[in-house]
Image (cartoon, rainbow, N blue to C red; front, top):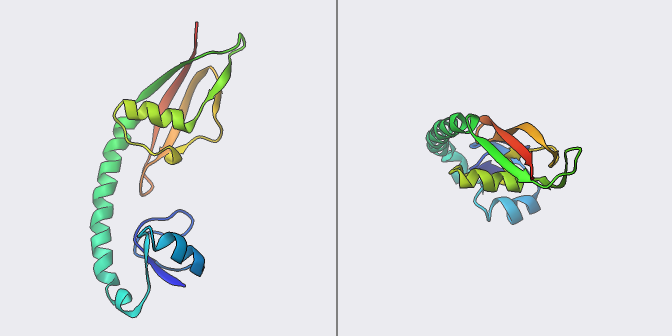
Length: 148
């Protein structure tokens, strides 16, 4: 089934592209969430108009994301957790913890956008990357201290 994407979807395409996907994926996921529209004759004709609107929205979102990235690059998140003598944490610091800590500092970041290969399990300083929108990324500092 051919569809026109209205949002960037990782591993599928970007806004305004016409892509072919399985019918079930389109009908059960993309169309109900308004991430795409069917590539019917009328929609294909409107594609140029849609692309203009999407280009404007993309540029404003990119500008906002770059401003947020500048602020995030200067941000530091500090956690104090129980740890063993060798610095191993008794728990871990996950992407969810990082998203909540950033929200407390006023940053709206979805936990799925935080690129953390595995949870942080040791005391120390870490640089964590956040993929915002449209290939705008930021790196913030995470400090994990041992609870006394």
